[in-house]
Length: 149
Image (cartoon, rainbow, N blue to C red; front, side):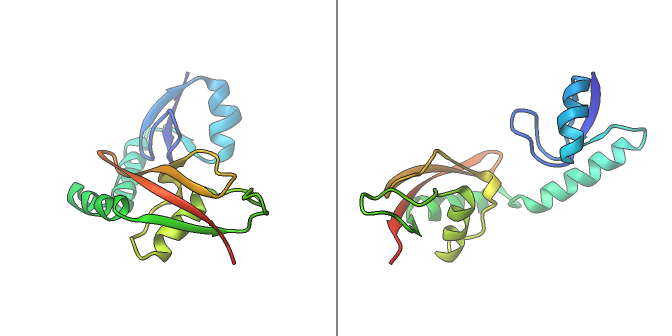
């Protein structure tokens, strides 16, 4: 087992600043080469505090702000204009980054693309998406995919 400090959020393991123990092969072959974790050392406690402080600065400061943003997001449909064929099939797909850009363009706020959970969007229509605004607050957003003119 290897003791590591996460430098980025990893689904199923934790967020930046978390101290985790994983099998040596997983650490050596995946986490360390990708740069999402560093080896826990004697100075690890200082690193953990720095990463947690940085994470706290990136997250929305309070639950109240997250609730206010949630209300704005859930009351509006987020429109994403994309190129599509005659039958409504998209050339490519809609990704979380596209949704984050559409939210910012609609002047609803700034959302990190890594916090958006959405299934595969391959045709024109309306789709549900979940936006994690805070560890305690998640907004259900309706994404309306329309054809670009």
